Image 1 (cartoon, rainbow, N blue to C red):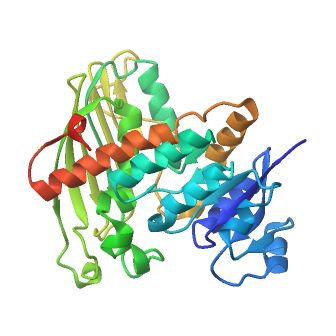
Image 2 (cartoon, helix red, strand yellow; image 1 turned 135 degrees about the vertical axis):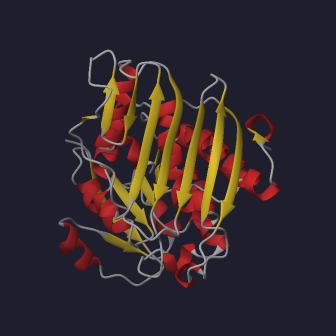
Amino acid sequence: MKKYNVGIVGYGWVATAHIPAINRTRLAQVTAVCSSRKLDAAALSTQYGGRISVYNDLDQMLADPDIHVVSLCGFPTRRLDQVIRAARAGKHLILEKPLCLSLKELRTMRKAVKRAGVKTCVCFECRYSNQFQVTKTMLDQGLLGHVHYGEVDYYHGIGPWYDQFRWCQRKDEGGSSLLEAGCHAMDALLLLMGSDVIEVMSYDTRSRSKLFAPYEYPTTSVTILKFKSGAAAKCTSSIDCLQPYYFHTHLVGSKGSLLDNKFHSADLGTNKAAWSTLAMKMADSGDVSDHPYQAQFEAFFDALEQGKEMPLTSMDDAVVTHEVVFAADRSAALGRPVKLSGLK
């Protein structure tokens, strides 16, 4: 069976989750790692159970015709340049989030990918989590009726105890609470509520705890979304909370409601006075080792094999989420609502 050879760019925390997940898929294997650090190819090969070459120069890795896909796991500030170079080399792309830190970069990145005709997978992997797959199935089957209000919120304290804190505290690397982490919640909200957002209003604030003082930007934001359908929604991103990780989900529809893994559906005749419980695996950890990368990557390589765009998390899907995030951050900065149609 032919397998797609994958080159990893940036050997950090996220890469250590990408590599085993890719290797467990049916159609792909990691055969190269490109890093600014000096890595031991033999040690990496032993660790991951396959021959891995090490590069310290991206262009040298991209020149290898036996590498079909690159997975960009480095800092978002370097992503645009890496995407342009990889796309020109004809490599398909796995891209960590956020894609970039500005709307201008987003537009340029999308053009480069379209021009090259390469396929993409953006790591909004929560769309492939059991929790959101089951929730989306309930919605598609009409068990909640027409959903007119929804909340998906991200509560995850990212402080000095967390690996990415060392770089995400900086404005030029983290961008905002939503871009750095809460974009997962915004993306899940759009999966469940639809992408026809016409306007957002956002406010931000920050903790007074000294633990989070190094952050160069507000670390909690709340965004209200207005949809073309008439629905409304809320997305909170809090990376300065002191509590267990919580991916809060609440949907209110014409035939019932869902709260995390609990629901009521009039169509099913469940008791409105008590929640019924869904047996599903919750998105309850920020650790990348717990993320559903394998399911997402499996879908990506299957789509590559069929010559199709991958479902749910292609660049086109991710661009919509990023546009809403950029609009929300602009709204918080300006102190007024921002229409999606006015983004430039």
